[in-house]
Amino acid sequence: DEEIQTASDYSIKVSNPPRDAMDPDEWRKFFKPFANQNATMVTIAIDNSRLISTLIKRRKALKKLRDRLPDDIDMSDKKAVGNAVMEEKSDSSFRLPFFGTLESLYDQVQAYEKTVRELVQRDYGAVAVFVTFETERAQRSCCSS
Image (cartoon, rainbow, N blue to C red; front, side, top):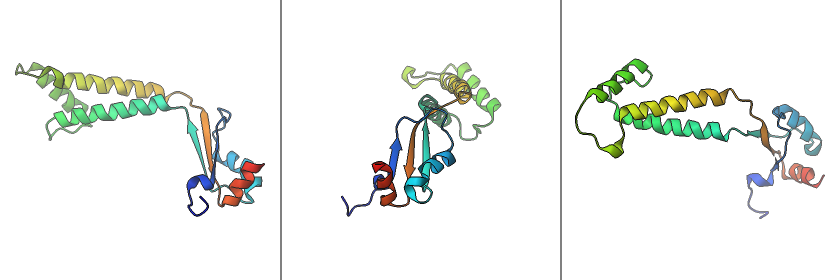
């Protein structure tokens, strides 16, 4: 393993940080005695998995909606999108039930956007901190202390 360099040779993970320990500069100061210099990089993972999951679902629903709309409709023009939805709704032509309607896709996007607006307002806490040092020696010094 000594001949192959990986990020784990230079990094450590703090698995149980205080939830409010969100300042990378404080983590750099904390680990400076182990490294003889500042840590190269500090990444703080937060507990926002529900927000990320909802954003992914929203993006997928937006793509489906965009793919179904005529090419000349700008997705940022809510009125034009709404008109296209209403136009399809009033059209009495045959629709495949498993394909979904523009209205259902539009409603789904709106629901995801509402959820995202709510989740963005939450105060997320730290769940892990990843610290990458300049040298393997600094990482080992930290691990052995």
